Length: 281
Ligand SMILES: [Zn+2]
Image (cartoon, rainbow, N blue to C red):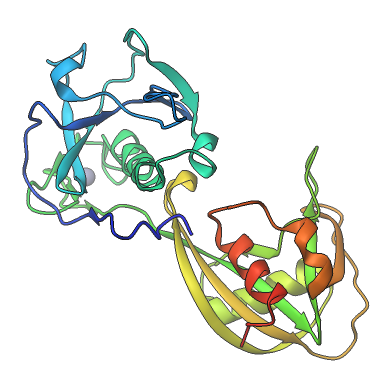
């Protein structure tokens, strides 16, 4: 999955740092990021180093270390010209390489949105100040504290014998390649979310809900995906909602190959691959 970058290591512990020559710099413009798409002739992506960064006097925010090298965010909003570099869509992180940089990119995007959206206090409107001791904005006027937003959601593998419930999003060009999924709502446990989302999207009742794994999903600016297995409870007849989901079907293990992306870093694809091999528990 996207976070599986061993032996590489993303060290997210908070530090007070200034960029040095070999620090990496991320700059985002909406959903696009500044990079070199074929940095070495092997299809590897790179982001600029501080030594050659064309806006050295900007506001640089320390993010984290990747393999001991510091990574920073250029907090300016204006796009910059950097010969050989271009602004590419964040979707590139799914298939881009090296994988460890793509995971750092996704996490950097999460933090960039947090910085962008918390310049002013949501309670009193005063200018926020970074605490300098941890990832926290503090309001000097009313004491409001704001930490990076983490939004849990569930990915659900509904099992019916040798079949699993596969869905297709109601979006142009969407493939029959998704599992039931949705954000946790107020007052819900993750298990409540599993029951509600499966019922809302497909009209199916489930039982024996068991946790599988989780995955940070920075591209949704704070997503934390929680994967669950569960079993069909009763009637297997599917009734799709027709809004979020266009289609859903029970797909047998041996037919799942067509649904799984190649070398795809998502929790959904991993769960499908695990089910195809009969290794879900
Ligand atoms: Zn305030």
